[in-house]
Structure formats: C-alpha cells, structure tokens
Image (cartoon, rainbow, N blue to C red; front, top):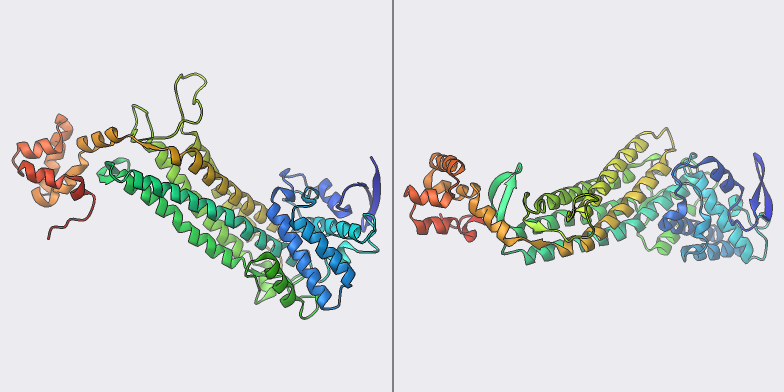
Length: 466
C-alpha cells in the first residue's frame, strides 16, 4: 500500500496515501473502537461540521485573519462535503474521549486536504494550508463541535417530525373509516363503556400529533449556539467580532435561525437543550410504545383474544405452529421505543457528568440523540406503511362484545339507580343474559326506553337530557 507520513506532538504515523484524513484521525481510529459506527453514519452531522467550518472561514476572511485564497479553498471544500463528497472519510467512532476533539480534527483534516487539492498541493502539505491554523482558525473543539451537534440535531429532527405527521394522518384516516364501528372501551383491561373504533384511532392520532409541537420547541432551543466561545467560552484566540459574524454566516448557510449564546461560558458547559430534546424523544417513544401495545391487544387472537381489529399479515409467525401470524411490526416498534427510553437515561447520565467548564461526555449525548431520532423516524415509517394503513376492523366481533358487555349498564344508572344496576350486573354475570334482557324482564324500564338509552348515539357522547 502506498503511504504518506504525517507528524504530530506524539511522533509520526504512516497513512494510506489516498486517505483524506490525517494523523490525528488515524490515532483516533486506533484508540476508539467502541460502537463501530463512524461519524459518516449520520450525514447530517458531517454536513453540519462542514457548515461550521465554512462559516468560520467566511468570518475569518472578513476579519482579515485568514488569507482570501485559503478561505475560498476551505469554503469550496466544505461545499463539496455538504453536497456529499468524501463522507466516507469521516471515520472516527462516534463514542470517543476528548469531548469531540477527534471528530473536530477528522473534519479539519479532511477539509484541509481537500482544500489543498483545490490549491494544487498534495495531501499532507500542511505548510500551505493547515488543519489547525487555518481550518480551525478562531475555533476550539469546545465550540465548533457543540455547534455542529446542535445543527445536526435540527437537521435530524425534521424528517422525524415529517414521519410523525404522516403516521398521524394514517391513524386519522382509519378514524374516519372506523367511525361507525361501535365497540367496548376498557379501563384496567376490564369492560368500561362503549365507544367507536374511530374514536379510539382518532385519540391515537391526536396523542402522537401533540409531540410535533414539543419537538419543534426543542429545535428552537438548539438554535442558540456557543460558536465563538473557543476553549471555555472566553473567546480566546478569536477576533472580537468573530462570534456574531460566524453565527450569522452559519445561520444563512444552514437555513436555521441560529443565534449567538448570550453567555458563552455558561453555554459551553450546559447540556440543557440536549436533555430537553432527549426528554421529548422519550415522551414520544413512550406514546408510540403504548400505541403498539394497544394494537397488539386489540388484534390478539385471532379467536381467543380481543380480535377487534386485524393487522396486515407481513410474514409467517412461527417455525412450529402452522398458520400463526404475529404482530411483528408493533413488536419491532415496541423495541425501538424501549431503546430510545434507555438512550434518554444515557443522555441524562452524560449531561450530569459534566465538570467545570466543559462536558467531556458530549459525544455520547450526540450519538444517542442522533440514533434515537433515526430509529424513531424509521419506526414511524414502518408502522404506518407496514401496519396502520392495512388494519381492518372486525365489525361483528366489536358488536358482539358490546352486546354481551356488562359495561353498558353505566348508561342506565341515572335511570334505574346504582343499586339496581349493580344487582343487574351480578345477575348478568351469573346467568349469561344481557343487560338489556334483564332490565326489561324486571320492568325497570320499558323496552323502547332501554333501546334508546343503549343506542350508540346515546352512549357515545354526553347526555342531551336535562
């Protein structure tokens, strides 16, 4: 293999000649083999890093601390990376020591070598354009990396918000389709009072849709960035106007309404926005998991469970039991929800582990948040396309459950009294007769009145009687 030699404070290393990264990235590859998941696994993070470096170069050029030809080469290299070039060269494991230094240097080195190529120089000829002196000018890992993290999470949030909206629309379509299917509602897995299957699915849709607003709120919190704070928030080695200019350029480049943090020392160590986002992802995961629990219960059977809905069959369910079909899509979503809930704990512990002016555990936070958003988005797409759109109502089963339920007696309590209703329920459970039959048999109400009170129109909404 053809190699080139690069040097750093620890000595030298041979790198593959065709590698666009440099010696510090190579050391990180040797040191960190934790997840096996490189930065390139999340293109939004690579794009965000390139945008941060481009905005920094633009600001540095305006302030006269970076030569125009270098700034132009850096910005051109960053533009290529934003468009997808060389993403495979962002190779560092997402979990790493150093508060993200390896990620930052991976970006600095790739951008530097690509910029060198644009200037007509070979890789590693850093005397002409340097990863630290030029690409990382006016920056530290401690402001560039968190800023890229905030930006990448905003990019990642948008597909998730779209996926949640599409899932909600599919549930709402089922609510309309099932609007006339009367069934029993249940509390604590016991018969409660009647409702429609449409009402049940509409509640699912509304419940999930609420979290779109929460995620958008989290996105707004991520718009405050600490770019310009450099090492600990004092702004050492950055020109006085650099913060405002760099954030202004980054906002324009990214299309996000970014603003400079009001207190850079506080912002450099604070993980509050990440914790808030993690909490919102956990909240949505819990709701999504509960939805899938309900789908599994409602479809249980097909003959010895509730069996009120049928999920679309997507694969055989057993290697030993012929004809068995399992609710594999909701099961997979349940596992996704559990993983996201666990990720929230990881984020919580990492945020709490910060010390003094920096949180060295930020790579763990970024990894868990990006992974959680990707998993939830894919889970929403899968649940909608492979399950929700194909759900069918078992109308006869729903009607039979209502007819034989004791829960319908609740509608009669204002007219026959709680004591009579309780006695009727006991008789129904003992004899197997329906509530309607027993009330009419005891002449507690005339048949027409019973039918009116037990009609879907009467039981599915508040009473219109005074």
